[in-house]
Image (tube, rainbow, N blue to C red; front, side, top):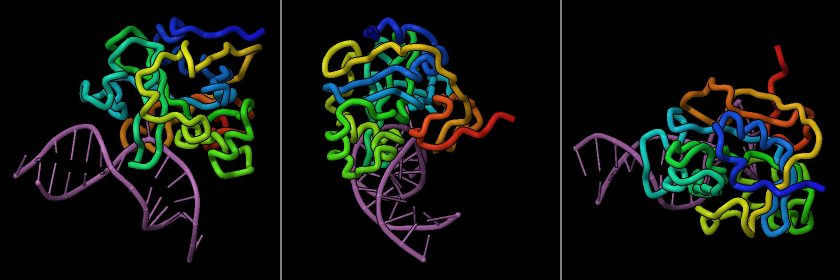
Length: 191
DNA sequence: TGCCCGATTAACT
DNA sequence: GTTAATCGGGCAA
């Protein structure tokens, strides 16, 4: 039986947690699936929201690990992060894509598409399909409506540069499940 | 107060 | 490949 992850899972470096999240199942009110793509952000990273210090928006990033940081992207979409490391390190993992496995009819309705590859393949799509909004900002990951299940078996994790950035574009802090059909974009083949 | 711009997406050509 | 949609944060004045 898969076991629940607790917030202690996140009490490590964001660079250790991020690849370990690939294959973990995320459910919100029972709806979701396997995480297949994430990106790491750290307070020393110019592309991170926490880079220039604590503000109202990013306050959750400066709190304890194992909590949810949600922000508005381009004034339109929501994006969800899991806070890592000891409190105050202001690092987090952005959830970029999920392989839908639970509550597919609900997600198809929320996303207004019947194409399962388009349900959760992108950070804004994940939040729309799982109905994650600002209302979830600051919530604990090991309490309802959130549920995390440890991955079962081994996974092959790919790395590459992050998507959509204008700063620190070359840092290889994007992680994905090898061979997944549900990535937001393909990873560059290994050289 | 005003201005610029973004960890995106979908609908164009 | 290109671009509009849409708005709060961050910074200059």
